[in-house]
Length: 530
Figure (cartoon, helix red, strand yellow):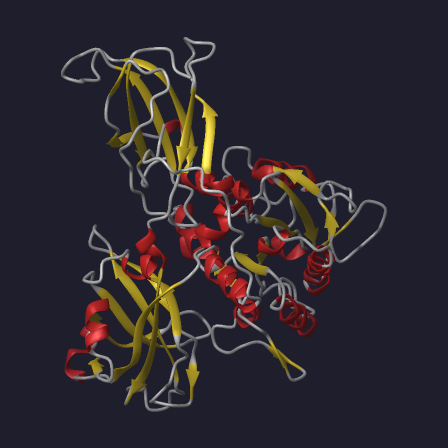
């Protein structure tokens, strides 16, 4: 309840290029305003504010309520009733996507509360189903083996392109037939069927330096018009090469589908487990060149990854309790388990929030004995055990819940043979295949700059994981080397690390025919924010 007469809400959107490291340095810019309501201490604002939701972007927001007596509605002499700082991820992860919190104003003991309701635009529930194949693709060299995939990027308002879809890799053919794809329309074109799209056909490399074969520009509207036809590929880097092949559009159609936000609104929660590589290949804790060295003035890569990824995922778990483990180290007293709880309590390994993960990591560094080898299978298997135990308890709402295992690990060192690599690769593959049948995604952040070959295998971009004739049910691993984001932009890191989670979530729910639980709609009136 508010305590004045004429009100207006200002929604401030934090600039994406600010506040990457120091929140106090943030600058806010006005994003939109509601209408003005007179003589009502409980105003219900009708005007809506439209924002683009991205799972991997917290999107800080500030809602500011003013009492305005100026007939010109200027804020220059307006009285601040109070404000609320939150994030879009906190709003959409709230039950029914309704967030109600107290306003903040040092001048008042009780400035009132604000209730924010998020609602997904219905048109954005459309799914684009399409099927592309390559025709007469040119090899990058005579001796090159064919390992082709394509990726689609969306044109942004600032003139840049952002990756929205990537196919699997097809081998040994210059006429690859990629699998049919399903991508939310909001992701691929933001609902604008005329928005330019860039299709690039690449030759895959295990080292990440993929070779561009050719590209073409198109739109969703053109893809519909080109069903049964081809798009020619060119390459500006090699203008004399002419047409580099073609992309054949076999199918393109729109269907309605449940969205990630539908499940969140129905109360779905994402549980996070974090595992941190403390092995000797990181370097001795006290060595300034160690990946774990804590200078006290600048965060190391592990600390950056913990706070950036943990901060994004934290709002999606209502109790904000996260199990945190370490591996590649021995405990005081000589014990050397494959993994251990960072808080010292293996039966209750949870800490509170991203900051709790950060503190648990800081406290354990220097107080354990670094060892080798690096074993991941026991940890992944333990997470699978807990998920299966939870699934064994019948629960309608629990069926919508999902789990994310975040593994932060270093790489191979030339000076320490076999260290930094996964030393139980065969068992790890089996554990991942087991996890592919469960509501689980595994995201791996690689720290360092050496060999990530094993991690790339787990990522399964080249081919589906298989062990002893058993294939993974779906791709659940996303691996990202952190050194690709050495410009310090951690928002790019989290965007890439978590990019596939909503898709993997929907794939699992669809495969098990789990629908969002219907909720009572509390929003029968036309207001969206009050």
